[in-house]
Image (cartoon, rainbow, N blue to C red; front, side, top):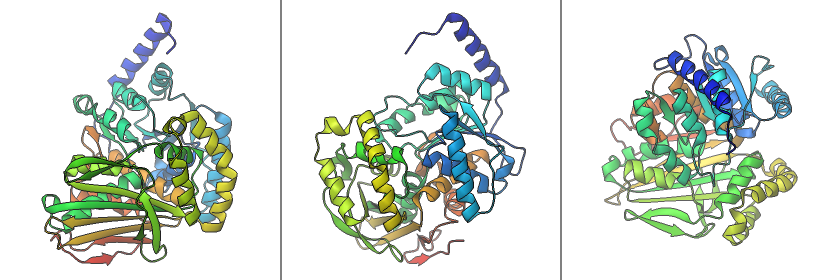
Length: 434
C-alpha cells in the first residue's frame, strides 16, 4: 500500500473521530426518520438489484440510498438499466435521489476517508468476487467508524476472517451481518427451519443444500468469475462431524426443486453453507450441491474444474474469461431463462424423520437483491445485536426468521416451509407467495 503524507493522515483521523462521535445507538425502523444507506458495488448486477429492492421495502423510499464505486459513468449506465427494469415490473422510478459516492473499496485509506466524509448509517458491501481476498477491508472500515454493516460474502475463508472481528464489533456496539442474500443467506435460515421440523438442532443428523440456476440467472461478470474461482476449490462437506473434501463438480445426481423447476442435475460445489451450518448449528453431516441449465453447462463446468488450480485461482484471468463469455451466456439466458431455486433437507439422527424447504424465483438477479434488502431491513429496524453474525446466528428464533422471510419471499414463485415449526411438526405444506 502506498504511504500517505502525515498531513493527509491527520486530516483523515480528525474526520474519522468526528464521525464516530456522531454515531448513533441502534437504528430505528424504516417508519422513522430517513437513514443514509450506502451500497458499495451497486453498479454491478447484485448491488444494483439491492438498490432496487431497498426502494421497494415498506417506507424504503424514505431512506437516502447512495452508491459507492470507482466509475461514475458506470453508475449512470446502471441507473438507466434500473429505470428500465422497474418500469417493466413495478412502475416508474427515476432514481434521481440516488447519489454516487466516489470510492475504491480496495484502497483502505481512501475508503476510510470517503466513508468518514459521507457518514452512512448502514454500509451494504456487494462488490465481489470475494474469493481470494485476504482481509475484510470494508468490514474493518465500518468497525473503525462504528457503522452497521451487511455483506454478501460467499467465500468460506473470508467469512472466517470476518468472524474474527466479532469481539471488536460487540465492543464498539456495531451490528454486522455477513454472508447475506439468497444463497448464502435465506438458504441458511431454511436450514434452521428444517432442523427444527425434525425435532430440533440437537436431533438433526444431516442437512443437504441443493441449488439450481437457469443459465447464469441473469448474473453479471462478477458472479461468473466467482463461479470460475469456486471451481478451483475442493468441496468442503462434513461427514460424522469431520471435514471431508471432494473434487469440484463431482457426484452428479438429481434434485427435485418442485413445481415449475422439477428434477435437475446437480453436483458438489464448495459453498459457504456447509461451513457456517456446521459451525453454527453443529449438525454432523452437511453437504452442498449446485446445478444449472442447459445440462451441457454442467459438463462444461465439470471440464473447467479439471483445469489446473493455478489457472482457476487467477482472479484477473477469471474476470477476463467472464467478460469474454458474457455474450454467449446472455444468449443462453434468453433461451433457458434466469430462474433460481433452492432445496434444503434435514434428516433426524434416528433416520426416521426428514423435512424439506423449497424456494424458487423466476429471476436470480431480482431475488438476490430482495434477500439482501430483507436482511438490511432488520439492521435498520434495530433487530440485530452488536457483533459479526452469520444469518443462522442472528435469526435463530422463529420470529426473527419470519421477519426476514416475509420480505425476502414476496416475489418468489415457490415457497414451502415445514409446517408446524412452533410445534416441531413434520408435514411439508406450501405457503403462498404474495
